[in-house]
Amino acid sequence: MNHKYIATQRASALEWAKHVLTNQGFLFENPIEVVREMPWSTVYRIPSSKGNLYLKLAAKPFAIETILLPYLSRYYPALLPHVLATNPELHAIIMSDSGEPLRTILQKKYQVNLAMKAIDHYATIQIGMIAHVDELLTLGVLDWRLSILPNLYLDLLAQKEALMHDGLTADEIERLIKMQPKGLQLCRELAHVNLHAKGTI
Image 1 (cartoon, rainbow, N blue to C red):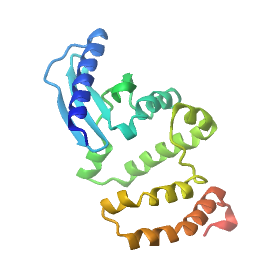
Image 2 (cartoon, rainbow, N blue to C red; image 1 turned 45 degrees about the vertical axis):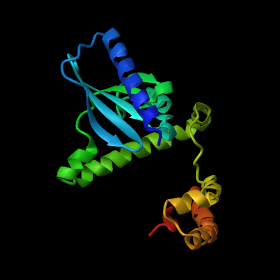
Image 3 (cartoon, rainbow, N blue to C red; image 1 turned 120 degrees about the vertical axis):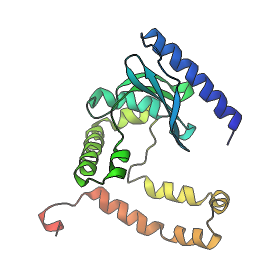
């Protein structure tokens, strides 16, 4: 991990966010603070005269989110955060406050109905985007369709040195390679969508 690069990216993103929001008429009321820091993203809360705003910085492997989220929001604005601005070069997105995160709510008290509702919304977007696959691929979204997954699985297992560095043994890798045909079979079965009256119990 290049810590110098990350520090530079964060400083540049914060300056960019302040500039963009100032031009949009926002006034800052309190210091900007980190509210979540994970390997795949860092989220800052920006208190303003018009409520809390959030700056999300995605790690490089997930930078497509800065392009994908505004695209999806065109079709499902009620199901996704409102995007105020994006900067793909900095992997940065500024969003308005969408309320308390589901994870926080479920950690306090797990509510099955809320979890199911979130899954339903997620499925709605996925199913709706089936008709836009070519556009998504043009945007740069990775092709992880079921027909592609078995080959991606083998590509991953071919990176033996990296996998062993992460803790897998050579024997475990070989066992996983031998499981590829089973994975291929499962992907074909799922892609077939054989969910009719005779195919369910």
